[in-house]
Image 1 (cartoon, one colour):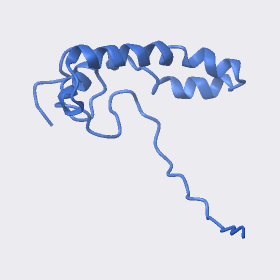
Image 2: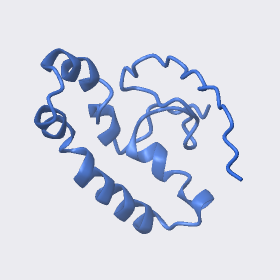
Image 3: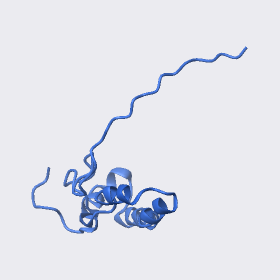
Length: 104
């Protein structure tokens, strides 16, 4: 006997576009700051050394750096790409020093 149930679609939350300076959740000692330093500051939570965490980040960056070309090849409009550009690998991400001296 086949039972079919009706599942209601869960509405997707509308999230604001990231300005590039903060991530949606706290990721390190410096709160939501988008930077390598902040991400690597708490790699121990994931039981990773800084070297292991950096290797994972480097692998992800190798993929993420090609986002623009990936979107263009799939027909995403230029204006949409420009809108997303602020959120994709902002310059602050590559900061390797704390954003400020205060810990959030």
